[in-house]
Length: 304
Length: 270
Image (cartoon, rainbow over all chains, first blue to last red; front, side, top):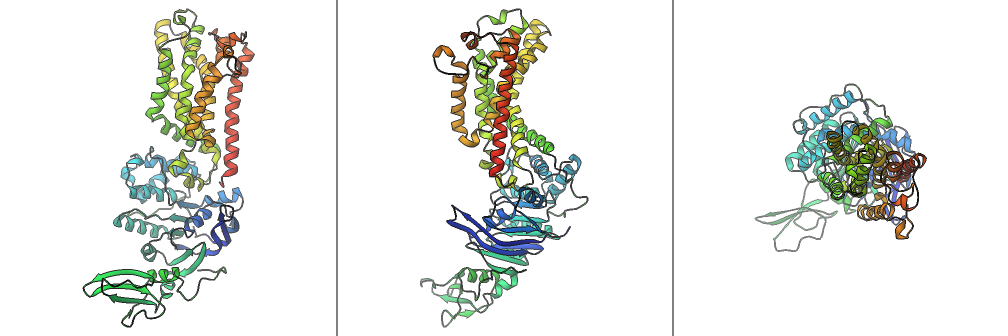
């Protein structure tokens, strides 16, 4: 199996009869491996993923997976057969056990042979460490376990393109790390598109990143390049705790004995005693979101 | 999470419509039959009706046909309202559970899921009726001998089942349009108006015609069962009219499902 060639051309999605443009002329080509999809709430990430999985039809533009465009119903089904999806709002049949739910999903994904299906369900249950509790009803599962059922169903059909939307929301730190590690291992020879607004999840797992803001691609490239966008623009400003916070994009705030230290983004030194520090991916992302980065991503198609 | 996915042979890619429909039916059946409400409501309504059996004294008849037909008539009087009520929330269940995106992202269209739901959830909801009927046949067999069994099974198939199939099909389709609450009110109103309010009340109603769902025509034509609204209309049902009555109910059920499938398929990108 090889990762698919996913090309998105002039993708536009509007709602409310064109009044809301959720995605506006998005051009993108997804590389193999883990790709992070970053953006603030409401930026269009979930819409993008729903279109990519064939759940939502675009208003205009095309998506092609290995040359197969998602235009007709049969073409969408063809692509869906090799795509896995973990939606942000993950619903499960709580009356079924994890094994029953996965068996049902496997059938819907076209694994109709009983023996093959049983083997596959066992395989993914093992992979997500749910074998021991597979015969318990899902309604008794914790949030993390339900998410693992979600990822298990997403990989049942051994997808070449795996799309996961905010998979770590609501998970405790340990569960989050386990989830990240699982996704990273799955990425081996497929494309995994990971949507999140937790920058750290992307930094730890994704060599490439796409930033969507207000329906546009604001950045696409290597994760390191996102950090360099803010190079020479990141400052530590320390001031008394009672002072008014600086009116600048602030990445974080650290209280200390000498006062409160603000990590801010500014193209010029914000104060005479401001200390310039090296930029991180989070700095680059914040800079991008506040239009401080030197240039916005080109709308032209390019490989990231 | 220590193991890594072992990719051996690719999973079977054969996508047969029937295999998916059967699978959907199987899991819909499991989920529905486990609901206590299904048993309580349906058995409760049968018990409520059978607490005052009608027509009076039919249990003392020596004719097996008449006996089972009148029992069937008592079973079918109220329980379809319960069947409709407990099936009504199945239609939009996936949306309520947040499963729509997940299911739409699979290569399976709406058809197998809709038919699976109709067959599975419908069969699960009819199960309490069937269990109660089997229990009754056991009791009657102990009293009257094994000759009751074939007649009882035929009466179930001809008098009780068509109406329940019709109501089940409506109950997994119409609530897509109306929502479950309005549908429950509607099914109650329909059942009373369409099957119990006969011509004696002076309002147009299918009660007493082959288009009622209460099984009076097959009961009268094939089992010498008690006739109520049909007799008021001056009709003694024939075998052909009984067939027409059953065929009408089954065709209406089919029409409800096919129409819903077409509408949902048109709306869905899958």
